[in-house]
Image 1 (cartoon, helix red, strand yellow):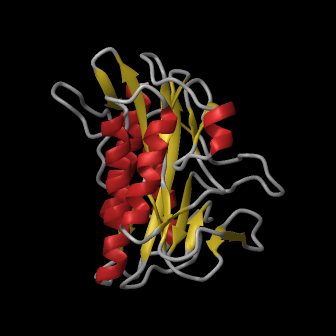
Image 2 (cartoon, one colour):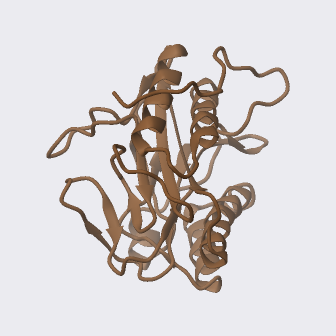
Length: 262
């Protein structure tokens, strides 16, 4: 699965290099799709069933959009934030990762939201090496977000990942008595999960938009989303969607070319 994870990391480098005021979300999506094609990878998101099949290789959610935003003609503006979530399959195995990127100069408060969301993902991965059950990790994640004055989205959770993008178990970023009693799971070697906290500046509640995919905050306040695919090994957690280590390379360059939306 590391091979897929490396390609997802590479796709994010392509996206990151393009995020700036004046570019469209559709242009970024096309560049990521071409990167996957150049590496012989299958995008996981394009064609996912729904009322309309998902039409892009990335979910791109801007500002108050929480998740599942559809790339297109929207132009990114200075002060925006854009959450880019993408994944691919290669050799029969999947990788999935999300990052919220600042566009130009963002406000200090929104910066704190991004820092909290990336920080709680880092905390979860760290705790996966010292806790035996996910409920213990999820409880600490929720407390971390509350202590920073933000709210954890509860409508969407992380997931197991392997041969398919979405596998058991479900991986919430919070813990309820019902989850602890009925759905908790052990953190043991061989487990691979996509951990993906979504954190809102205001209310935790979300609402669907008319495009049948995009979910937005109910109060219009910003949201952030970070995700890694993480494996539990005998020596602890390993981030499969992290940057290349010693001796690891990608077959295709990660620098984006100028593209126009398909």
